[in-house]
Image 1 (tube, helix red, strand yellow):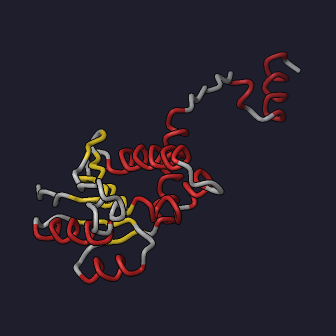
Image 2 (cartoon, one colour):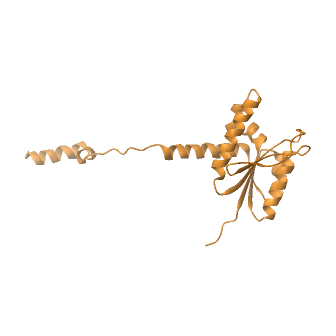
Image 3 (cartoon, helix red, strand yellow):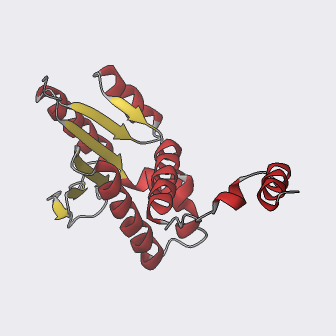
Length: 178
């Protein structure tokens, strides 16, 4: 049996939070720390669910304007969270991760609606998905999970309940000798 290539998932964090229909309602109209933390938490959970054990997953946020950002990854579950280092954009980190994944002969999927990143990584043989595409995939995944978890009670039906009324009347007439 042929072995599948390893996969890498790279999510452009703030781009998905601002552009993905699943997350926009959390951060609008206010961009407070609480709303962003709630949205980031939901994104992390979604990436964990989407990636499963299939992908090596990263969420990259832009920390370039933060002089204290060192760019060190933090792991939550099976997902690595990276705030780009001071002076470096998230775009550069995403491009570097995508390139490293291709060098390691991995299938790489980048989730972003940033046209520049899409063009850059697509030229390198990387697959891409828009923020809304990811939002849609997550909505479908959540709905499938909900349906799988919903208990289905089968109705027990007697033979009399399964037979159409005309046939049942004829059988009763035969039984009763009429």
